[in-house]
Image (cartoon, rainbow over all chains, first blue to last red; front, side, top):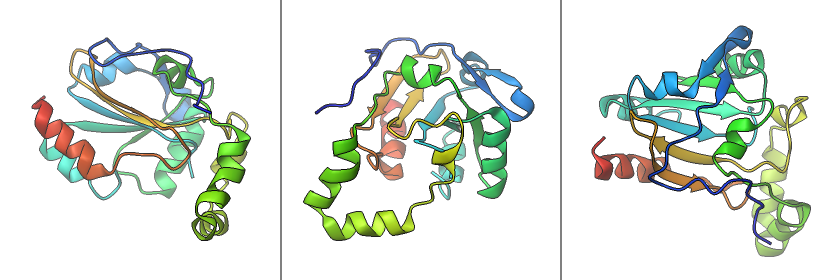
Length: 48
Length: 134
């Protein structure tokens, strides 16, 4: 059984400009990260 | 990625980890792990869904590993740190992945985990960065 995927984002497409949370729930927009240069995002199953 | 961050920095690339957590939980993990990269929270899993990261199922998580490699499965159970999985926002079935974005936000590499332990080796990600010459 293949994992269910909600969206079919493809290589070559623009990443969704989602808002992530830093300390104190400070909003960090993804575009603010890639604006600073190439970015590697590692999506963990969970922290720890 | 931990331990290889200097290699990413040498290539002018920033690394950020995203987890199913609040911002404070993510920051706490970063401090505990002495992470050399940003740790950010995505409690609603909007980023996970936006990147098309899927969810596993109980069979793949709990049964299949014991059928395929029982000793390894038992070892993983014994060594598992489930603290993060117990966070309020954590979906234990949520799978992870790795993405490389260029400075325009274009996805240049995307690995969607097919099972819980499925992550590309760091050297593979570094090699891909070298190939892409971002």
